[in-house]
Amino acid sequence: MIFDKEVNVLKSIKKFKTINQVALNYKLPQHVLRFWESKFKQLSPMKLSGKRRYYREIDVQLIGYIKSLLHEDCISIKGVQKIFGNQTINQILKSKDPILKKKNVLAEKKTSDKTSSTNLNNENKKILKELLSDLRNIKNSF
Image 1: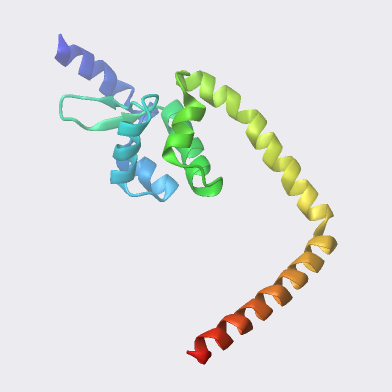
Image 2 (image 1 turned 135 degrees about the vertical axis):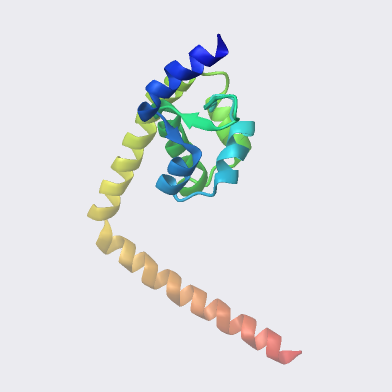
């Protein structure tokens, strides 16, 4: 009976991605994906008798979302776990849209405020240079 189930799964295997394919797609090591499986209960690829992982398209989307939260938004693993809570994978992927829209609004605002941001950058550079100079003077005084 288990064999029949695996045969049916293998027939539709083209719909699934291996851990290697997903890791290459997101430029992540495979051990990171395995680690995320232990941290995020919503991420659970299908495993056959050989313990080989097969990710559904929805799992792949969730991995992309987790990566963006961890790497781009700099949210900790515990923070992402709190965001996800007890939601299902479908609920998480549906609720991510407002966050992405918020990012787009911020990106548009940044492009419109380029001139003011360059002025701020120049001011910040001056302050940092002065601070660096002060630190060097303190270091040299010892």
